Image (cartoon, rainbow over all chains, first blue to last red; front, side, top):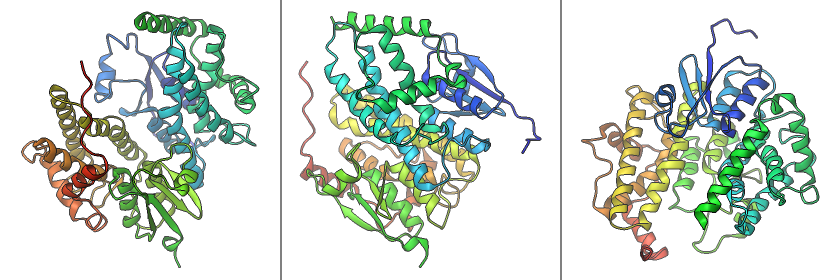
Length: 230
Length: 230
């Protein structure tokens, strides 16, 4: 069903933010044309547009649809799914299944991502045993969710897959930087297969941060953390 | 027998602001349910089995299947049961309700909760944070209500339900710290909203009193923890 009204979609994002990358992936999966606006200095010099469209949090991503802003990545993903109803559906139609998707997306954002970030930001000399255990506990729940499925969304990529993309990507990054791996094939065969499957999709791999630039960002964060903990 | 008379159970306590959200939503839809009250200090087997990831209340059990996370539960209730619509029809309005609900959980409630753990100047900082949050909500109410009593308009909507659980706890803080947080001279719209909420049929019989909560805290949680030594 073609839309006859003029649609203007913009996205304010940042290259290393997993949240803004997730929104880009969702837009591209649905074939939605948008204008991307990169924040140049998110830390010290936020753009007037960002401050205007997200005065409460002053964060990316910000989706601007026909001049109206939507913020918070999970809110944006549901907005995209409800506004542009073409395939792929990011959320299933059954209310119970939808509740499960919302539950796992919140789990990934609120519990899992912070646990992984904490572990990854620890410097090379810090003992990360507790952080590693916490992250792996979370991984076990996600491994369980994948049983019998190619993606969290079933046969096609869904909202959980998009929200969990950071996991696939972080794992690859972590293995390049350290000799410790969080998600090994032995303990997490389904998650490893899922990550490979996801990273082989061009719409996913085209939207990940540039590998070398990202790795040096993580390296410098880890060194900074090690320096402050001394 | 209609859908709204199917077997529904809710695991929770009368003090939890998150459980309260689920109760209001169920009342709004005239859904009869069995309220399974958790005892303080000992999580039931049913809770641990139904919410193995977080082990927290509320948990809604419908047709024997558990749904966790209060806002996920409220959306599930909206999608499954007949009656007044909790979320607005328009995707953009839904995004605005969801945005503010996330703000409540991510920013507003942590300030409200953790004020108990600090002393002196830190208390003042938290009070300012709470007041700023309430001012933002007052502004949002004006925009969303369009002159009607609730964020949802004539009826309780998603954001009304999300905020409803915190009203009694805000009043607890007002008494404990001898400060007016819902100040009708500063946030007149939200002050009027509180009165409308308290009188609403879905709320009035279940909303706790501030004194009741203060007594519960005294009996079950004891005095606030002492501040860390410098």
